[in-house]
Length: 260
Image (cartoon, rainbow, N blue to C red; front, side, top):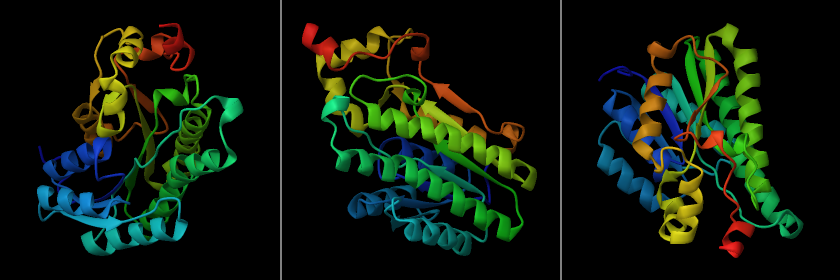
C-alpha cells in the first residue's frame, strides 16, 4: 500500500485519463506528485481531489524549458525526484497521403519530443541529487503495430519505445531505470468518442482476445509496480497491457468502417 512512501514524482498528462489514474495510484501508494498538463482548470480539480500530496503545474511538454522547470520544481518541492511518468501525448487520424506537415510536426513535438525532454531532464535531476530513480514512458501498442491512418502516432510511439531502450542502456549503470508501458485500447475521455460509436467499438473488440477495453486503473497499477523496488531489475522493457491485441492486426479504422 505504501510502496512509494516518501517518493517525489512527476506525471505529465495528469489532468485526465491514464495520467490522472497513474497520479492517483502514486498518491495512494504514498508518493507526492507534481501534476503536469496544459489544462489549468482540470489540473486544479485533480490536485484538489488528490489532496495535499498533489500539486498542479501547467506545462507544455513540447517546450523543453518548461519540462526542465517542472523536473527542478518537483525535486525542490519534494526533496527528491524519484519517479517520472511521461504520459502526455496525442495522435491524428488521417490517410498518410493527406496528413499535413503541421499536424505531423505537432504530434511529434508532444508525443515524441515531450518524452525525450522528460527523460533527459528527469535523468539530469536524478544524477545531480545522487539518488536512483525510475522513468516510465507511456507508449502504445501502436509503437509495434501499424494503424491505418495513424502514421504520425505510430511513428511517435515507436520512437518512445526506442527512447526507453536507449535511456535504459545509458542510465541503468548510473542508478536510473527507464521502462515503458504500452497500453492497448483504454477507456478514457480521449477514446470515449470512438468507443461510443458502435461500429468503431466493434472493430476494436474484434481484435482484442479478451473482448474488452482496458481500464485506466490497470495501467496505473502497473506504473506503481514499475516505480517500486519490487521491479528493481526491470529496465529497458516496454510492457504491453492490451488484453492480447498484439496477437492480432490493428483495426482498419478507415477502410474497415467504409466496408462495414
